[in-house]
Structures are given as structure tokens and as C-alpha cells.
Length: 359
Ligand SMILES: Nc1ncnc2c1ncn2[C@@H]1O[C@H](COP(=O)(O)OP(=O)(O)OP(=O)(O)O)[C@@H](O)[C@H]1O
Image (tube, rainbow, N blue to C red):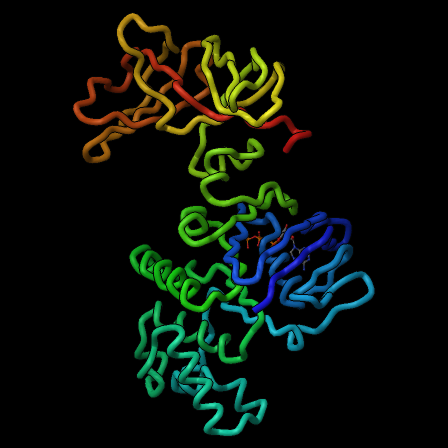
């Protein structure tokens, strides 16, 4: 296995930068998810790593070897990069073993050696004994594992996944997530996993690279991405963070600072060295918001929706100070607040989103 290095990678189509100045490193054996909304450049990034596109600027390295820069590109078949696509594209008239071993046959690998490699690859994806079946007799998840075995048989130095679960139903997705996680643990394969599904990225990846409009906006472990988003886009994209306008009243002390949010003071977490400033933003999660106790200061406003969730109710709340802002949080049963009720809430925690320059 090998790591991946991208330094200042840019890909331009006409005068449009699909990927802009992306620098990142994926360690040998790491599972990196590349996450972002539609059109942010994920697929282009994957195609650059695979070698289907050449870079316009910057450099890509796999292991010790530079595979792409402005001077030229190593062709895809010489990169030893495996790819698992969304539609697994198995040949229906070939058995599982024939599908998996096809590349070995083309490369004229000796028969017993080829069989050994096919068996090995099938074992890696927990499909021992399935070699003689035809794809039509497999479940969607099993087909996806055959596709994975087919790419592993060539002993790739890294494996790219292109939204591999997008075509599967919700239950199968969950069990395939477990399969991929177990596969990664078992084999230590270096994986770059493209997805627009943040729950999937969170569940699987060691680190997540969030892309927006061609740029890499944050690369961090899932927990850090959730608790310390670097930009407003990351804050609202990950787990529907609530982004609120704020004014920073005091400099950072012990990882916290005082802010004013919609006229109320709150203490939030922040990066070291934050100083008082106007026009700041904070990110709150549902669990950072609670109903104010009687007599306690807080934000007055109106409950605009109350949706029962089984054991709890999701409340959507518009503060009187700015009814265009909507906050949401959950209340355990019994919930006394119906739609239209007046209520007072308290923001008990949050995260100060770093200013543009710091992000
Ligand atoms: N060959 C091309 N020529 C021109 N523009 C392209 C080409 N390939 C991609 N783009 C543009 O680059 C941008 C990024 O596309 P890309 O497919 O990488 O996004 P994505 O994040 O994978 O989106 P999705 O999740 O919808 O697949 C888009 O605006 C797309 O239209």
C-alpha cells in the first residue's frame, strides 16, 4: 500500500476551475473520505488521482512516485490504483471468479497463480465460496463486494471508491458501511472514498476532506469537523449545524470566549487567540440549545413547528429578535410546546467559526 500526496493541485476546464489549489496528504493505510455537495469537484479529484485527467497545475504523488504534474501524467493502468464505482459494472455472463480474475487473464497470469489470487481477493471481501455464482444470483451488497475484489486482485497501491453505496437502499447501505469498515481494518488498504453523504463519511473515515466549489475547506477527523468547523459552509453542511450571527465580546481564555447572540450573552468554544470582533458567526448544535428555566434570561420567540419523533419532539423556533433565523432542537417527552407557543430558550454552548482569514 502507499500514501497519496497532492500539492497545489488545480484542474481547469475552459476558464472554470473544477479543482482549485488542493493540498493534502493521505497516509499509508489511512481511510480518507472526500465529502461535499454536488458539483464541488469530488469526482474530478478522483479522476485526477486515477489518471483519467491530467492536472492543470500542481503535483500528485502516489507513494514515492510523482504520477502527475504540469510536465506529464503516468497513465491510469500504470498507477496501480483500484477503483470501485457506484454501478459495479460486473459482466453478467461471467461467474464471480471470472469477473474478479478477468484482468489477470488479460495479463496472461498463469492459471493456478491466477486462481490463488482470485481466491485471496474473494476472501478479503468475505466472499469465499461464491466464485461459481453469476452476478444475477447475488445481492446488491455482494455485487459491490465482487467489484471490490476485482480491484483488489491487481494488488493496488491505493483504492478509490466513487460513491459506492449511492445505488443501495438504506438498510443495505448500513450493512455495507460495516463491511467496508471491517475490510479496511482487516487489510490496512489506503482508501480515498468519495461521497456526498456525511453520515457515511463520519461512520467510515479516519479523516474527512470537505470540498466546496473546487477548494478543500477543511481536512480533519470526523469529531473535530463536527465540533470545530472551520467555515460557515462546513458548519451548516455537517449535521445541519445552526449558524447564528454573533459579536465577540471578549478574547479567548481557556478555549472559550463571550459572545452576544441576538442580544443575549453566551459563552462558546473558540480557537486560541480569538479577539473581540463584530460580524462573527457561531455554530450551535441541537444539544447546545435548551428551554430557559423560569426567571432565567434567554431568547424569547415562537415555536414554529413541533414534530413528534418518538420519545422526543423536534422544535423549530424563531427568535423575536430576528424571526428570519430558525433554530432547531429536541425536547424529551412530555413536550408542553405546540406550534405557535411563545417560549424562551437558552444557548448553553457553541463554536465560534474562525474568521475568513483563519479558515
Ligand atoms: N469534463 C468537464 N468539462 C467541463 N466541466 C466539467 C467537466 N467535468 C466536470 N466539470 C465541472 O466541474 C465541476 C465539478 O464537477 P465534479 O463532477 O467533480 O463534481 P462532484 O462534486 O463530483 O459532483 P457530483 O456529486 O454531482 O458528482 C462541475 O461544475 C462540473 O460541471
